Image (cartoon, helix red, strand yellow):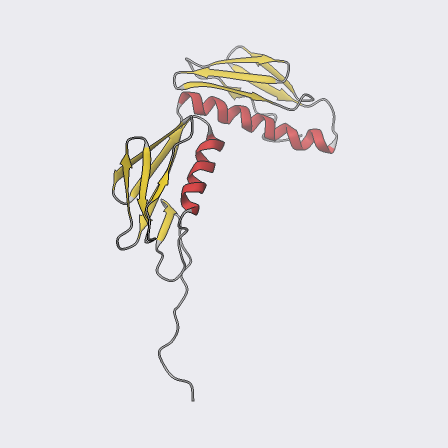
Amino acid sequence: MSRIGRMPIAIPAGVTVEVNGNVVTVKGPKGELTSAMHPDMIIEVNGSEVHVSRPSEDKLHKSLHGLTRTLIHNMILGVSEGYKKELDVVGVGYRVAMDGKKLVMNLGFSHQVIVEPVDGITIEAPTPNKIVISGIDKQLVGQFAADVRKKRPPEPYKGKGIKYTGEVIRRKEGKTGGKKK
C-alpha cells in the first residue's frame, strides 16, 4: 500500500473540492484550480477530507496512487496559501527591475533580457538582486522560476548568475598560476 496515497487530505476552511468523474476542481481564497486525474483512480470527498484509493494492485495503479494524492494536496495548498520561489542575482553589474509587469534583467549580455509573465504568475523585484515569483499552481511557479534561472545559470568559478535562494553552488578551483617544468 502506498504510504503517501493512503493518507487523507484535510480540506482547510474556505476551500471547496469538487470531483466530477476524474476532474478535480479546487476553489479557495486565492483562486481556482482544475485538473484531470487518471480515470482509474478513485477520488472521494468525505466531509472535510479527500481520500484517494486505487482499484487494484497493478504496477500502474500503485505508481499513480501517491501521485494523484500529492497533486490534489498541492492544489489545495495552492488555493489556500499559494507558492513562492525566490531567486538571487549574483554578479557585478547584474541587476533586475520591473517595467510594468515585465521583468527586465541586466545579466552581462550586450542586451537586456526581458521576461513576460504568464497567466497565474506574479513577479516582483523587491531589490535589484532578488526576484520573487509567486502563484497558486506549484508546477507553473516552479517551471517559470526554472525558465528565469536558465537565462543565466550560476557558473562554478565565481558563482555569478541567477540561483535559487538557499541553493549551494559547488565551486571549482581556477587555473594555477605556476609554469610547469
